[in-house]
Image (tube, rainbow, N blue to C red; front, side, top):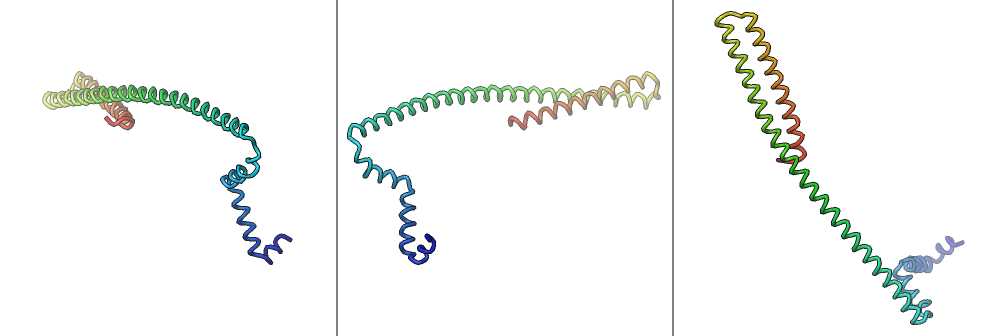
Length: 164
């Protein structure tokens, strides 16, 4: 029935639809309430209602101010902790750089020892004593290289966390 009426009287149907849509808006409902049924309330009732709403708003603002103070303090503590952690990462990065440099130095010294032993072996022929020293120097060079690689890997991790 309603659809048939709307099809037969499109102007009336569109006016009813528009009026319904306007009445669904909160601003319109509030204005209608205040100018119709709201006028039947006494002035003291309106003042009491306004006073209660003002107190509620005041309490909400106080609670919100306390929450803002707490969150600001937490944010400051977090920023301080971040700075301390960042400083520790920077210091660790500097120590890792020094350690990597030391490992490179040890690696080159071990390679120099191996070269010296190889030169002695070429001049005098290889002996068992030379082989033991050669083995020790190669093992030291290998260990120094693996330590350097490990230190550089950790240094890259720190550098990714904090650009130093």
